[in-house]
Length: 352
Image (cartoon, rainbow, N blue to C red):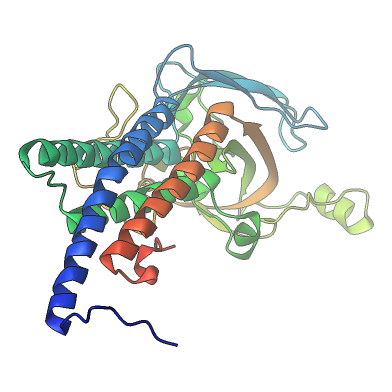
């Protein structure tokens, strides 16, 4: 069964009519996208505001759930931890209390990078909406923004949002088990962020996982330290046993003072980066609660004890949910534009 046009139309004229119809459809779609883009911009600005450094900040509980090995709280303002107190009752350390120094806040690299990505995303949407509005005002006959330019900008925006969502979710625990995270060896929290300073044999390392702030505490010992004869005997006869964890019996190169190298961060908590953000597979700033690569002398260490504490952050959970919804809405808009423009569906997918 076939469909014929009556009266018959010459192939050349049919091509002209098809192009004209497609142009009208594209122009209509560009006009309809204006309301979608404005809604996206408003929602993205609300998401960005959740990371704004506003006082008094968010107070987060930092405590182990079923015992009191770690018990305390920290206060997050924007991308920084500005104050807090944590009591430690670890098996391999004397009981002590760690107090954050308000004069030296802890910067979370993932949050700093997330703030930068959201800033870039807001700038992109603001530019698109501005250009589209100017095109409609100055075009006379209802001219709209260049569809190819719009498609390119929306793809870039999709990549930024996807990177932001991946950053706040963090790596999957299964991936961590397969490829152990060793960023703590050179980017743990600087000892100067505590008053008094952090003990030299304690690694204090923050990261993000599933929109929660995760603290890793590691008690370290030099790899070449002699083992006490009493300890050897106790381990041999079974009256004592080693603490089991995924980093036991492995040697790491730890830079105790290397994390003091701070990245250039403004008073608002955002990082000073060039206007065009360099988007690479590795997130700038690394992972963990410190800044930069270790610059001190490496010490070969074992991890005697390791404790993981997860602190749910309502603001980060809200950011994660909003980013997911924004990404879905943006994908639908890109798909609609791509279909009318004749783009390949594979081109609409954000590279993972």
